[in-house]
Amino acid sequence: MLGGVSFVGTNPSFLNEAFLGYVDNVFIFDEALSDSDLDAFRLNGGPSQVPLPVPAALLLSGLGVVALAGRRRA
Image (tube, helix red, strand yellow):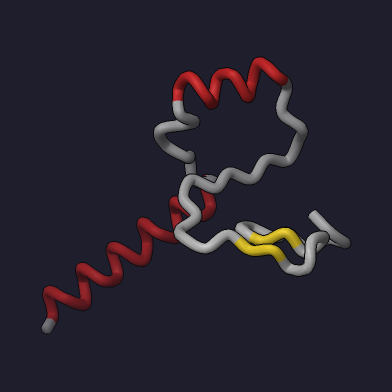
């Protein structure tokens, strides 16, 4: 993070050096990971499912119900 801005696939410190290709499996954490946390990611491949916060899950469920109701009327 540089000045509150995150860069994925680029390195602005070295003349805008950039990774050419696809970036996959990006994880953002709110705390520094320990060595054992990093080892667990290397061995297990990271979390298989990222849980949605409850409000987001409720919103997505509600949108799904509205979409189904609209589709049945058409």
